[in-house]
Length: 130
View 1 (cartoon, rainbow, N blue to C red):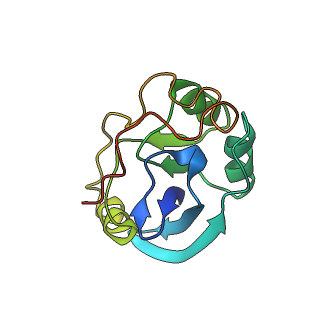
View 2: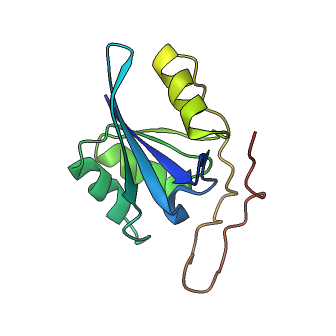
């Protein structure tokens, strides 16, 4: 399994599309085989699902993501897990042990609309670093 985690420093980013980078982790038989940091190439409609799919990712973890983005990831066969906060290494540990739980997206409906054009930030709560 190859998982991308929207990352902001050592923490899960609140909004997947505007994260500075993705932590991509390859997991097999409950072990982390490889962990790499990939810069976010940009937030354009439908681009990131295709970009991550081409990297072999089959699951994306983020604090928040809109319904349209979730649907676009589903179209390319990538599972979405949202509502996740905390340190990247702790999230990876929970994922490997099967204890990572999906929750409610930290983004409000429509909060990503126009992001980067007429908006300078998403309408979700401040990053929650547990």
